[in-house]
Length: 346
Image (cartoon, rainbow, N blue to C red; front, side):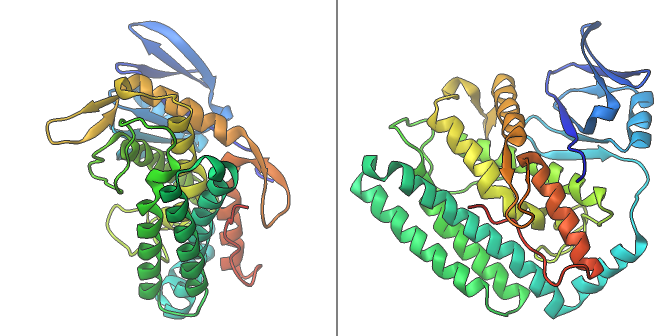
């Protein structure tokens, strides 16, 4: 089992990062605020106006710690990483399968199926835990969505082209997000959800989800690179310059269970309110600095929770699941497994 390596997020505007021995030192206004040994980290994420010395960047690259820069809305800007590692034969096999229509579709089907089943589980858990307190309209809508997702999951299992699978995945997302607002409890207008919006997110709930997806993409990308896979060449997502297509494939399995669940939990526990968001002139809704800190803390805490891996049957921190899935994907491509076992949450 690979040791779980944590990720350090630096969100304080104006922070300066430097190397001191084998440590990362975080300074603000000339005063040291934090010191973390590099060997304790798997990634360093800088959000907003955060600077780092060239000595630190070089040391992180040598140590296998990827440094990622996000803007204040969580959008990926750049990353600094060391030499590409991994087995060239594994990457050749990855590229070969993406070029082979049937084999590409077989792997894409795993990602789509897991995403739909996990979306359905989010709804089922809400029905299980809160059905007696729901209004009849919400209850009917969620039960109907649960049935629709069961049907799309059944159709996703059938042999078909990758293009057809993309259509089913889109249909399931439409069903899921059409009832997502019913998963938000209480009568707060702040988190009224009327559909998925991105680039930019147009309401607080979408801002929250988008930021979490960005964090999760970073983790999926790091996990794939850890096991020598090329994060840019995917099976479900088409190749596009600058897009981490395989990381987005892997992300599909975890969107509902990590990102969406965290967003719903923070909203329903009233951990955020209107003061945590800023509306821009173009209608974009952004998280303010304190809100990002709350979200990152919750995300990190959630990643520490232990769950049982559905295929391996071993308990491990939630944050390690993308790494375990990347390892299983690498083993599938090597021929050690007949079929990739996607992460299906129960």
